[in-house]
Figure (cartoon, protein in one colour):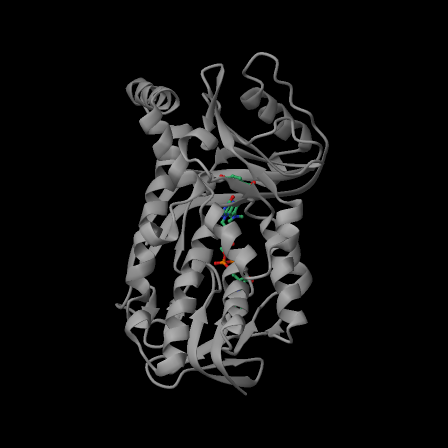
Length: 389
Ligand code: RFL
Ligand code: PHB
């Protein structure tokens, strides 16, 4: 079997890449370890930057997102018994975010690929990458896929990054001493906008998926286990961390999904080796406080699509050679923003009272200075593609 681009992984990065290549007349085969049902149900990100929304809409896969997604023009920072709004419409006019579940993006992309006759294979076993420096091919389940280029879009725990020989990659990593416990609940959101809450008990986030489904996160110890978090404890903790301003009451409901996510920043450089190009979580991950992971995956795929289009048009490798460099500028901006939001809002056990005062002082600055609030807002809605990479 032969294709132009062999894509490992049917997450947002792999599926969007396959779709964008198809629009340029470039063939691809997507190889995914999990079932279609599994990837369509995996609850993860919810915040789409303006540039992500525009990319999906321009690629003809944004119809349902534009109908059902919830545009948001601000977020709330809650701390010290008060609510502070960061108004995007004033600080970054014309730019906003859209709340639309990652699994909905994935469903829309799979539907588009299959409708166009795309080759997306689920439940493939034992994917291995070969001959990355010369004529690359992928083996899986006793079959062989020859390709001009391989795109490693198989997430943080995939096989693509480890296929790069030892000593090639430089790895930069930051582990946080806590995790996020996330739930999805069948209850109308108690707030119109997302609430990022900093308390002495730890951080909490109130997000949502639709007018009837809410999403919440709690900062928990890095070794927390779901078994220790029965529903009543989750709601009691969310109340304690969110019901901190007068007049706010948290509505509760049936919890339909729950999980614990470690918090980590990670970058592998360069994002390419021979004819293998890494995109999305395969190359870098961020702690979710800045809502950047999915958006970075989309940004990588935009750059890779342009580079591959140039390569398949006339054999030019200039853009492909510069792929990693072009992506990493944005990747590091997002690393910094995600680290900054995480540091600003979480409780660090090792912090002494002096460090806590510094944190509160910075929060006061961000919520009172137009310049500081604009810094948060422009990073949160996403820097424009031309300036940001
Ligand atoms: P994915 O989504 O992990 O997809 C990789 C795919 O590759 C498959 N795979 C393999 N396939 C074949 N062979 C193998 N050996 C394979 N190994 C793995 C996997 O099954 C999977 O289908 O990576 P991708 O496409 O790069 O997308 C990245 C995003 O998923 C990720 O960055 C975001 O979810 C991060 N994230 C958030 N990002 C945002 O932009 N905004 C948010 O609000 C946000 N919130 C979050 C998040 C991630 C979270 N978790 C659970 C990590 C909230 C959470 C809780
Ligand atoms: C989500 O809705 O899942 C979400 C929102 C904002 C974040 C992270 C996750 O920063």
